[in-house]
Amino acid sequence: MPLRDVLQSRRVRRLLGLALLCGLILIGGRLLLDEPVKIVVVYELGATAPGVRALVATDRAPAPRPGAPLGDVVLRKRYNYGDAGAPAAESHQVRLKRGAYALEVTLETTGGPRTVTRDIEVRGGGDVLRVSLR
Image (tube, rainbow, N blue to C red; front, side, top):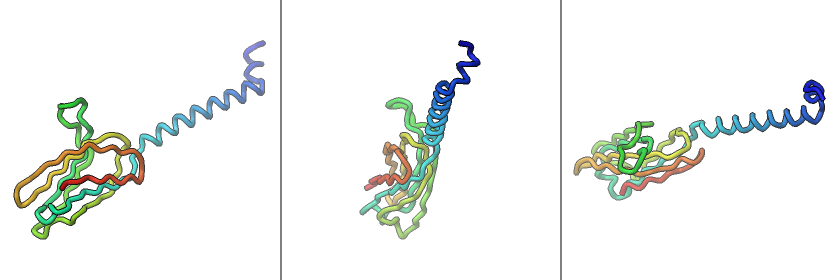
């Protein structure tokens, strides 16, 4: 049977159409998963809040291996509170791609700066990540 006759058969056209549809679904899914998603990060300061004058949060790519320096800065956010001190919890909405990040938070307090690093995982849109800084 010549190739032209095979390609014109109804069964082969259906199979080719199904293969094309599956390919488009796979490509579309891959593109959607690579899009940044909205998440809410909540910094819980608790009883330390009155002494906090500023909070600097830096989202970084994780270290490529244990003990290595953290990766590139992805996002940096600064909150200034002044003498009144910080609220017990501070939250903000960010857009990040799904994956692992190292969150580096520097608290500028009346007793000097204190830096805390936490590993976070962005799984999907609408996530609320609570980070305790007490």
